[in-house]
Image (tube, rainbow, N blue to C red):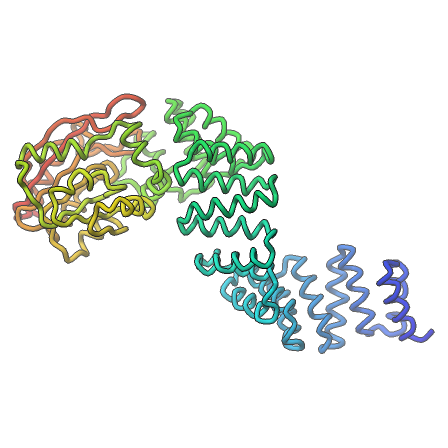
Length: 535
């Protein structure tokens, strides 16, 4: 038979699954015609199917070089490169395919996947959209477009694409799950939980969806349900380290420290490089007074993640190292992570009553008829201080570093305005003037107070008041305690008042909060701004 007949017969063998015979025939053709593009290409596809990627790349690449207009060869070469983990070379091959065959939606789609893998996510989004222009009913293309948009932080667009994927394929379990993740990241927790439940209705043994549902429920403050979801995830996949870690976090909030420690230990056993689980384990060891183990776990966290702000800060606190302030990222993460349960933990569990005590002290000192035109709650949190002082203020604004905790405060409708940001930077930048500054649970996270006191005169009306609480210490100006919070001495506050134009009008000892069922003592202060900074 001639070469064409042999090629036709080889292709028939290929289609029928008689692959060895097809391979023999392709090789016979190449012995006679070494640059036979179709035989090179088809033999390369057999190598690709067998997992011989180097051979496949060589054969299909040769076919594409021999016959540069061979679109199928360029497309398959892209697939081989992608399988080899060479996304940039794959992208080049898909682009060549598109030059030859612009309406090939699969080439646009695969180009998008390759670009995404190469970290060129913006370009990937454009290619996914090109693919969808040609094949608008492709659920997987909508799904992967949504994944790329989510990685870019374009969450609203991602939600639209995930929803379209689930409309086209209602049983697309990954789309339901990832839609839940996008909704969770948008703070739409009830919708996120509903999406995870849809994923689980399709695939009840989907451990990661149970874990994700637990995260949403925990952030909604539904701890018992969250714990149940984490346990379901672990019943399905006992090696899901993230679920062990998340279960531990929930158990900490429930006060079950010993059980939480077991969870974190299991997480780091499964994944020894899991820095956050080591950090969480250290925190539990600290709560259990197992300080040597706490220090060891914080050290391990910093080895795995040298930039981890919380671990480095707590390591300093437990080993007696000096510091001037708590890292902003640590404070932000601390309060964002506890925003759903913040009031319960601080007020009910830790006996925190500083806002009410400070308001009572102010009423006693200034009289109940005092009014403030424009007040600012520094580190406003969920609004505990705002609620205590609202009735004294014509206008009350709040600022806090943690966005999620600001949203909790916003929902209470206490404040006239709320701002997310760093306190000192805000004070230095604002054009507003205030006659009352409130800082009930702030100085414990600032340590060195000179920057704050230096910023206050910029935005203080004449005669403005500063009402705040501290954890107290003797001797030094301020000390970092093993709790990770700072204490300030009365002498330090007096010196700051003298330097920055304030008079101390009231200083009163008070219980601040509980730590391991024992009250920490502190001071309540009311200072008045009289001007005349000595700096």
